[in-house]
Image (tube, rainbow, N blue to C red; front, side, top):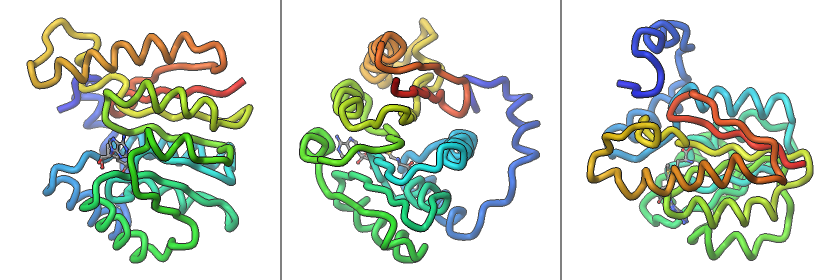
Length: 213
Ligand SMILES: C[S@@+](CC[C@H](N)C(=O)[O-])C[C@H]1O[C@@H](n2cnc3c(N)ncnc32)[C@H](O)[C@@H]1O
């Protein structure tokens, strides 16, 4: 149950959810079975709309997991657009590779193996959109690298900024204490970053959008 949107409203919104295509559905089922976090469907829809608005050529995703969003992103790009996506888990890389092949998107999705904190300083291109969706303790470092890699006018899209509702709550379960602390610190950093025009939206698990100025 969402701690962010009133369950009654969420149920109403869900009644409008288009039926996902079979590959997306298969990935959602696998993620649920294996407990692999993927974005909420409303966040994924918002990301797709932004892609259609800004028509990016180059997208960087941190991180891939099973390539659920990589595939959704690549499907919204023009022919010459591509996604660089970074993942450190070998198990997830193997699953992501299979799904990318199944989607026929090997030419548009470049799966980079490694820890984003080591890979990002080696990247030499700038991106039109960067999607941050990693371990919460890594958000700050990844954010600073992203600022260096984001083009002027580019969009930073950050997931989980309302983190199950815990950053705004005084009752945080022990297993979420650390991650909630990281998200609270990150949110302050994000909204006060002068190189970006930012806002945090109560969509899915909380989406931060920053436009590089
Ligand atoms: C929330 S999932 C990513 C979901 C994916 N963005 C999507 O939309 O389908 C987080 C993934 O990040 C990977 N990860 C976390 N921190 C990382 C890091 N510093 N470098 C590389 N991969 C990382 C984890 O192994 C996990 O697969």
